[in-house]
Amino acid sequence: MKHILEVKNLRREFKEFTAVDGVDFFVEKGGFFSILGPSGCGKTTLLRMISGFQEESSGEILINGESMKGVPPEKRPVNIVFQNLALFPMMNVEENVAFGLKRENVSKEDIAKRVKKMLKRVGLEGYEKKKVTELSGGQRQRVAIARSLVLKPKILLLDEPLGALDRKLREHMKVELKLLQREIGTTFIYITHDQSEALVMSDKVAVMNKGILEQIDTPQNLYKNPKTAFVASFVGESNSFDVKSYENDTIVTENGWTISKKGLDFVPTKLFVRPEAFIINPDDDMDSIETTKIKIKTVLFDGANTKLAAIINQSGDEVLISLPQNAQFEDLKVGDVIKIGVHFDDLKCYKD
Amino acid sequence: MKKSKYVFYVLLVPVLLWLITLIVLPHIELFLSSFRFETDEGEKIISLANYMAFFSDEIYWRTFLNTAVYSISITFLAFLVTFPVAFYISKVVAKKYSSFLTLLLLIPIWIGELVTIYGWMILLGDNGVINNFLISIGLIDTPIEMLYTDFSMTIGLLYMSMLFMIVPIVSTLESLDDSLIEAASDLGASKWTIFTKIIIPHSMPGITSGGIIVFMLVIGDYVAPNLLGGKSSLWFTEQIYNKFLATFNWNEGAAFGFLLLILSSAIIWLALRASGQKLERVGS
Image (tube, rainbow over all chains, first blue to last red):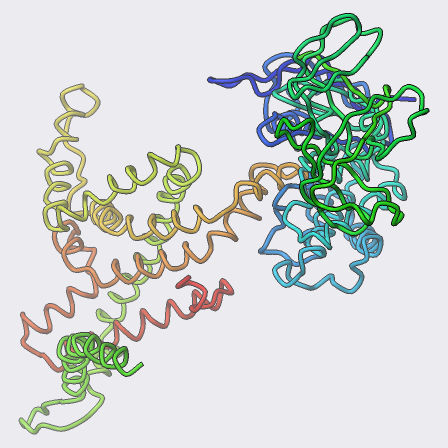
């Protein structure tokens, strides 16, 4: 596989802080790559460096094997879909989409043909003469994407473009973006703070925190085997426990849970358990599980996503436990004390 | 509901008083007197003779034409000079300084037109600062004639009207989202294309309203052409002044005043038509 984008030890320092602190990664051609991180983690700076709007302090960016050092944004084979879309309000839909082509000295007939084709592809046929201010949020989104894609960029950068949409439309656009990317085969690099967007759409996700990439992996691996405490807490829901001690293959948590965990070559400080990893009332003869007692505090009903909030070991610390989707535990009540278990493999230990 | 209506009328009274006593009534009086004409026999009649004088005597309509051409050029010049400044204030410099810089621009207005014009006279005169400096460094031997020329008049008119171009342009530019400029650049546009296709169209309402104000101020100005202009640069307002105060022909002066109003409004209307702008959009 060829790497369409390679980023080598990229750094960007500002006066008071380092926004991007030595980042290495590559993106495969035709992939859907997401950079996921909380706001202020440096992901927008990273994107602006790839697009050329911000100069790197050190390091290198290669697009299709060519160094982008000193290449201005208008000369780079990448296009951005901006967070606020940045459609040109003084132009109609057609003129917006044709804007980039006109700069490339494409013939008039060609421009008309390509614009028409692109608008058809994003489902905006017949909207050519509409003002962009007359469009709905989703339609504006599509114009912005069409405007970039019509230039056939090597890479399309998307800077949280779904942020401004309402939840329903966002869910819909997620699927649509993924399908569009599959269909046209352009490499997408998607910046977001929304883990669900990243997990649903991407082939690979890089989790960014405080200027560094914590983990680059497939969405499945990211969820199942987070490499760092940050990834475990940021991607998906997790119950986190502070570790008090680790001696003789036994972890004792701050809230008094004693767990045997073999073969750790470091002293963990944090323990994470996903809400769905808990087994309610496990059979006594089950192997390789660790159990404890909890007292149910509330039942958080949310359809298929119903959870229990419970107190562990009278410590006052709360844990969230997913309920299986069958009606097996419907009769659990507030105040019940039940036994829960976790498989050894689902206990994720980290050192800060 | 009742109370707010009451407040509305109370607040309306001073506005109406202002408008009627200071603007509407004098205009009606001037309008009526512009049609009054005294024949050679001393008979007072109502006629269009005052207006006809403008068209029949070449000096009048030529002066007006001259004034109009100059005003249009100065308006355009004001745009050329102020746009980079407005761009700098609103887009280049940090936000915290931009209001301070705008405030600095207001200073000439505080001082007043007459004083600033005397200032320019000190600078531009034959024995003025600029000529003295050029002679002292040996660049020239005899003073360059700058004062009482079209040049000095243009500078004076530009100086006193510039601000009214900057302020509306700054406010439209401030509303221009920087990401539009970045998006255009990302799509391959050169700096020139960004300027002509994004920045200018966006600031068009500001440019137009600035243009209208500057044009009206310049074409209706009396002080700068009178004090800084030469013998050849006769301004139409000077003609009106002469009618009122030199020849005491108030009726013809009134007619000329209305002609100035009508003709300059017509020029603005034509300019708006030609540039495809609408007056309603200019206000925003």
